[in-house]
Image 1 (cartoon, rainbow, N blue to C red):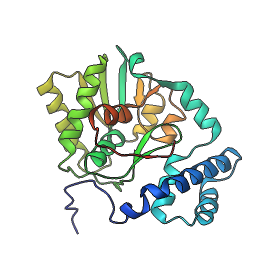
Image 2: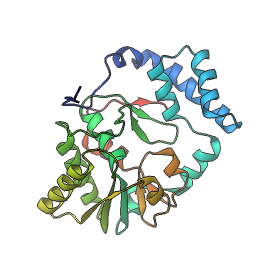
Image 3: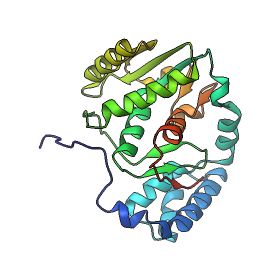
Image 4: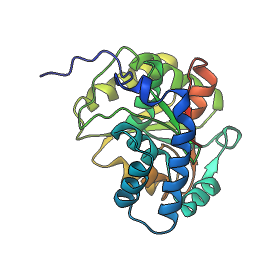
Length: 238
């Protein structure tokens, strides 16, 4: 069946799975999984141990996995992270779908996670297909206004070319930038992770693989959420 979603909002079970009473359990699970990862356990095996111990549902396990990292990864990410005052006059390289879908999900009322590394991550998944939703343009505008306030030199969006509708999104991004006078570029690339990992620009993503490889990064999605979406209520697992 065709994807007819108009929002990137919460799963029907999320209200119960991520209610406030679950936060201490999820934080403990993140702590335990991070310890196991730091001790050299494989992620799949470690997640099963932790998930079974805390009797977590599948979506809770996914949240714990996305929020955890080893001590070595945490130290590296903290060392490479720039704050908002340090990106002035810098070039930004955005992991397009990663940043955009997080803001779309928050605007849709979806679950927002703050992981151990301080990054904001959503629970949405595209599975190779991107669909424009009602929150797409408000999300792009929020991202653009925040970037404009930082006075960066330029912003380059990287979009996965194999993802369907990536070309249409690229056109929306460039049209909006033209209307607002923003110095934006948007490229379709086979694998943005590889480009971002080697980029000399300041990378904006919450992708763990990229964060563990890039030279410098900025927590763009979290800044957008904290400054522009006051109604957001993240599940804080930091």
